[in-house]
Every structure is written in C-alpha cells, then in structure tokens.
Length: 401
Length: 59
Image: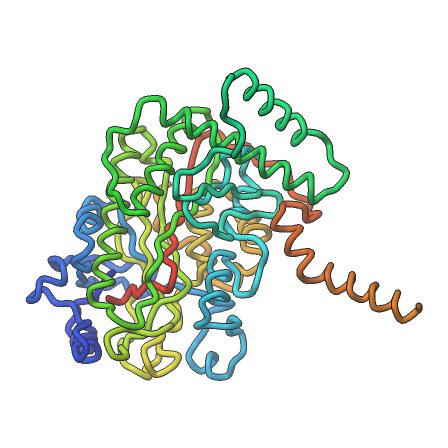
C-alpha cells in the first residue's frame, strides 16, 4: 500500500523485489506521486518521503485531504520485542505466520487465542444491547463478538427473508410471523436455546430495518459493484438508520478475500487494492451525504503482512504490516517509522523480511477505542484484557478529539 | 461404574474449560459481570475492513 522513498530503503526495496516484477516505481507508473510527512508517534520525527500503490488513487487523494493515517509496521505482539528477544523465544505470540491463528488473534486484539473480538468487547462496555450494535456484512468475524454482545451477520447475497413467511393472504402471513416472534421471545429455561432464539429475533429486526432503509430515500452516492463496495453500501444504510436514532455505538466488520498472494501478486494486488480504494472512497462520500462523516472511522486489519523477499511471483506469510485509518475524525499522516529493509537486519525476524512490529494491535485498537469513548480502565482491563499496559503508548495519536 | 462416572465427569470438566466455554461465550452466555453500559451522549461507529489472506502492505 505504501512504499518509502528515502534513498536507502527505496534502493533496498527495488533490489529485493525487482527480480520478480514486484518493485513499484514512478517511472513505470506503478507508484503514485511522491508525498512527504513528518513521522508521528516516534522519537525520531524526521521528514519521510513515500508513495501510494497505483491502485489507490482515491485513498491518495483522501490522504492529501488529511483523512488518512498510515500506521507503519503494526502487528501482533505481547510486549515490545527486540530481535534478540524474538530469537530467545520469550514473549512471542503463539502460532505466528498461521492464517487461522493470526486471524483470530488479530481480531481478538490479544496475542493468544480468544472467543471474543475487541470490537465486540468495546460494545460490551459502551453499547446499548440493541440488534444494530455489532454487525458483520458478507463474512462473519470474531471482531464483532463480545462477552455479552452477539454480532449479527448479514450475508452478502441479499437473501434475507425467512422461508415460509411471505404468502397470501397477508394477514395470515402476519399472524404466522407474530406467532414466531412470540415463541422466540418466550423465556426459555435452556440457556443455549434462549440465546439462539434471541439471535434469530435480532436478525429479523435487522432485516426489517434494512428493508425500511431500502424502501426509503436511496443513497445518492454510487458504490462500486464489487463485493466490498456493496458491503460498505449496506453499512452506510445501517449507519443512517442508527445515527438518526440518537446516541449510541456501533461496530462493523466488512471484508475482502484474496490477499494470500503466494503467486501472481503484481496484478492481483493491483486489482484488490483498487477495489479497497474505490469502495472506501465511495463510503466516505456516503458518510458525508448522511452527515455522519465525523462520527464514523474505518480501519484496515489483516492477519499478517508478507515477506519483503518474494518467492517466484508472490510473497509469503510474515508479521508486521502497514494499516490505514480513514475518516474525517482521523489526524492524517504517517505514524511510527518504516523498518530497516535489510534482509536479516534488526527488524527482520526470519531473514526474508518478516518485520517485528514496532506497534502492537492493542495500541492500534486502543487509539481507536479511546476515540470511540472507552476510558483507560475499560481499555486496559476489559477491551484489551490486560494486554495493553506492556506498551509505552496507549494512544498513538492518530485520532482527532 | 465408578470408572464410567469418572470419565464423564472428566469429560464435562474438560468441556467446560475449552470448547463448551468457547461456545457459550460466542453465544453471549458466558457469566461475565459486564458493567452497565457507560452513558454515551453522541453517535459513533467503527468499521473494520478485514483483508483475508494477509495483505502485503509493503508494496
């Protein structure tokens, strides 16, 4: 997404990646025009030159408007970790480089397996318990599950009706639905059955809201036809409903697949980042349209970054990664430092450019959580489950207000 | 008989520690003493965009 353009790192990047056509350059029009920023959240606030991937012109424009923060080399950590500590093996998160484990740990926001995500736990402490509090669109995610928060999942295919509930005459269908609601609402002595009934009721309420949203004034913002574009269109519709109901908090989970680029990366990455950039840009326009721009912040998450050193045409599982935070409440800029690009250097865990993160997922999440309204005690003890205090900064400073 | 009860008890104990607790938690049933929601006076939303597979942020 972002390539440093200081002479040392850019030369290393080009040398390491050029052999497989994976080095972006302005000469080949695969890198957008250079930008520069004063590095934030670091003891070394130098001016840094960098450029965005050519698939992301919309996000580059939003960056220019101060609405994008890039958090450099952030990832899954238990404590600040030097290479010597990594090699000694103490304090290292479990099952690094594994898709299923790192997917769970990144969404949990803790460096070990967990049954809840940090978005769901934010709603545990700040939500009101409604069916609009925590919603995944497209694919499910642990991120929206809390201890008392049960996330709703909207499938991406648009099929939301319960079978056997729409028939003629309408009053008979209404009676059947009322009976079902009555059954589902009844006190159930079996905890699991009661929770399942509540989940179904929540889903039915959510579908009713969504239908009302679709039959009301449609959003005038045009969204891309991509899966992610349509997911974010649904999110914008739900935000319009919820934001008009008064104070409250919502967490959403949207997603895109296909980033496991062991091969064919040069063209696949362009295609995927283009979809991300176009969808997020449309989402920002829609937020302005519904007057919610200041109240909604989007951010990227992934299970890990990829090796700086390619294989033949792709890259492999690594660790620390750059992430983007987008919105009108974001204090745009670059946060932290680019790592040392030397293969086998001080920031490289494996010798192939798998960076040891400089910031933890907990710091990244806590900065967003503080903006969301959680206080220091909630963040430390409940949202990040005592896994935040090991780090010097609980707030990386990329949110305004 | 004793052995049977013992293994059932051990099974239930193990379930409670691992899978079953996970399932209960996922259903929002874990007996966590969640404090009453802090009062919020405005509206806010966080949107997580998850990139499945491990995005190459370096490129």
